[in-house]
Image 1 (cartoon, one colour):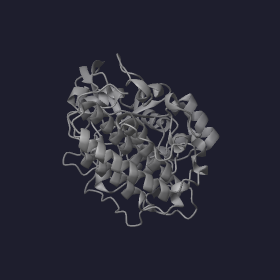
Image 2 (cartoon, rainbow, N blue to C red):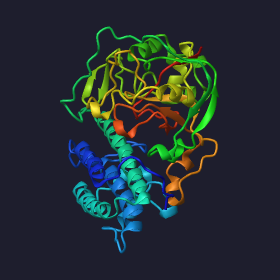
Image 3 (tube, one colour):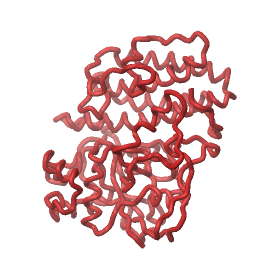
Image 4 (cartoon, one colour):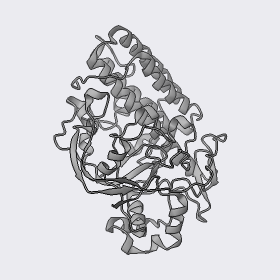
Amino acid sequence: MATAQPVLRSASADRYLATRRLTERLAAALVPEDQVVQTMPDVSPTKWHRAHVTWFFEHFVLKPNVPGYRPQRPEWHYLFNSYYYSVGQMHARPERGLLSRPTAAEIGAWREQVDAAMVTLLQRRGDDAELAFLVELGINHEQQHQELLLADIKHVFAMNPLGPAYDDALPAPATPAGPGEGRWLTHPGGDVTIGADPRDGFCFDNETPRHEVQVSAYQLAPVPVSNEAFRAFIDAGGYREPSLWLADGWTIVCEQGWTRPLYWSEDLEREFTLGGWRPIDPHAPVCHVSFYEADAFARWAGARLPSEAEHEALAKTRPVDGNLLDSGLLQPAATATTDGVSLYGDVWEWTASPYLAYPGFTPLAGSLGEYNGKFMWNQVSVRGGSCLTPTDHLRASYRSFFYPHQRWQCLGFRLARDA
């Protein structure tokens, strides 16, 4: 079991249920046939996401804390475990789309049963600090899967020649009057403190420990790179110039024939969104690009990508505010902030930092130590959240991570340069 950590944020039954209900609202737009499809190994079917987070609460919270608790369907443990090898084997990830059973309806009924047991437990032991941490971890875990659920169904629909929309009535983001990149943000450099302290509230173990990093004076662009700017890179032959690319990136460009961001039409005029095919907004942040594409653009633009420390040092001076899941747009949008600065939302921003453990990192005890620590190699850190990230899930120290070739998530970037 994970070591208890002080938690300031409430892990009450109300917060638990609000998170669980949001997952179901996000899935409610889909018919059962939508919820079964898996278009590539990185994508999981909707019903698998709904089931996996339910298994998480049942296995890591209910079984250890409710005497005599018996899983509703023990055989489902194998199907919905994701990567926790210390608790048993699991169904192969690329084959999740082969599971027509259990049905989406059966998973819905299972969620209700687990929710009832969780509420009873929280009402009885709501003041237990260790239990509160486990529940808060589960809530944040489910929020991660809410974002994955939307990103994955977008890929599913994009692969359908009919181009179905997740929500036909999704509002088109408004472009503010006179959009522009504005003045670059400047940091004087020196020792900056990054990371989180669990005593200040919930955080994932990969955000710890808080520590100092030496940075030189630098500047960050106030907003992520726009579609218009990325179109200029394409028009200038960016995808045809090997000198701009890291070796692995150029190999992928050649082997997979990349010529544009994922979900852009061949004529570079339309993009596939959760609202279906729509005209590309030139002022909105470019989305669905790999680390390699971001790095190549930065080199072409005479700039670079920021480090994790550079992004966090400026992000923590601003409130968590931006185009996040709560806005309901489900699509990157041109910034409408009063000062033209946007450090949260729209797109997860590639950094120049490999996803590695911080100095002195200690993973959670037991099986939950597999949550983050074993992925700290061969991936790249991203920062800032996206238009699919719940607002109360995010903070300046939050670090997510992806393989450098991946594009199906809401991935973009901003530029940095030495001051």
